[in-house]
Image (tube, rainbow, N blue to C red; front, side):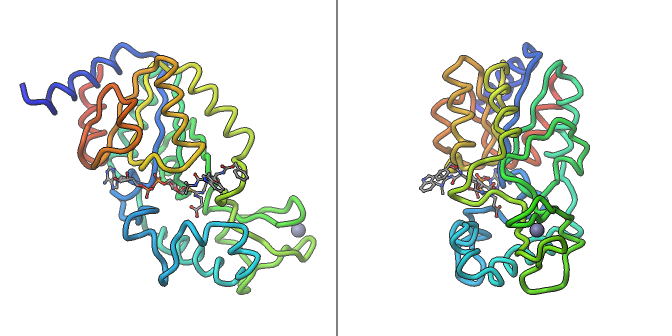
Length: 246
Ligand code: BV8
Ligand code: ZN
């Protein structure tokens, strides 16, 4: 039997034996819907890296430039639909007793596919919030200004995403911690395993005894803790894997 066949069968067996399953996804899962990844070629915008733009410092020094970057990404999502990989995770959720879908992605595609228990670690491009008061709104309702201002207090609005150097939303962290404690299997799909504290969720689940099943185009730091790594596009591998699970 070829190695990849053997690995796939092991991954199927691990999921068949599990009632409590967590999934951690990254930009690679949305890449199959045409959304540029964070670190690949898509990670650059007008010569500036996404990592450099996704920071409070960039927003302080160039709020209009940062809003241009986010409006570009929000606009690029129009017409983007979930792919087979997103849909396979909806099927997987329905067959598990307990299921957590932890995503680093901010594109809303898991919810659009029909996933229910979605934990958005890094927030969402669908919403903006005030930098001073509790006002928030949908980004398709934004005032048409270079730097949208809050209708309630007049201060600047910002995208409701988590920037580098910012803490993750408490409720999302609590749910992700529960998943790490309880899951028997954690499927980790389409993430470079570079960004913390998201990447540590996989390492900690593995260290605790959960079986980590990685799905990626290439090896990542998470491959070290994976019981099995399935190499290939998530839009092909995930449906194939879930399709074989009882
Ligand atoms: C925090 C929202 C505590 C914004 C994102 C030094 C100073 C300060 C902080 C740090 C530091 N060193 C480390 C840190 C922590 C820092 C961090 O991790 N930095 C990295 C760059 C080293 N983390 C933080 O700052 C976090 N907060 O730590 O709070 C704190 C508080 C105060 C001070 C210090 C610490 C906040 C991190 C959240 C950042 N926000 N997104 C926005 O989107 O604009 S993260 C961003 O990266 C996206 O969400 C993205 O999803 C995420 C992770 O990237 P990936 O999803 O993995 O995507 P990537 O492009 O990297 O990889 C794609 C993968 O898919 C690849 O492996 C590829 O092979 C694979 N792939 C591609 N195509 C396919 C595929 N796989 C399968 N099929 C395919 N078709
Ligand atoms: Zn306000």
